[in-house]
Image 1 (tube, rainbow, N blue to C red):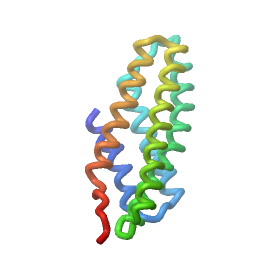
Image 2 (tube, rainbow, N blue to C red):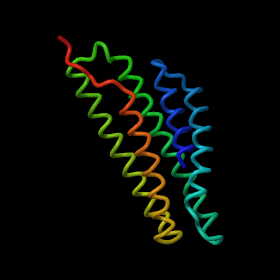
Image 3 (cartoon, rainbow, N blue to C red):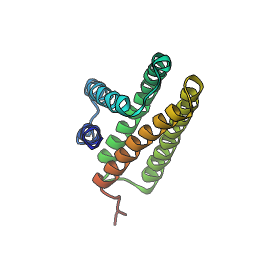
Length: 155
């Protein structure tokens, strides 16, 4: 599992290193991340043979929506990097509000799909989905927070 998290975080942080967005690079990184992530999910989430097709169909639907939010996360990190040295109080406030809203949307997406997965499987499979998604998301959030500088008040 740690190998997967390392790959995920490396991909995310490598995108943060660039202050200008390149949509094709982001799409490529998300595709690579998605394959590694799907492999990690497959190692952890164990739907029955009867549930498997429905689960993976829902998972792919979830991933499509998660990737949209992931692009927004990368854009916010790029915005932070671009404004870091000159960020005003108003810009910091606006940026933070966007981050909070994006975190809510991401958390709500996981909860929504937990419910959908439970409907087509059972509580164990749904909980496995919820646990792995939260584990990965928490690891990414922690790594990002450890690797971006805290904003300082300009003198």
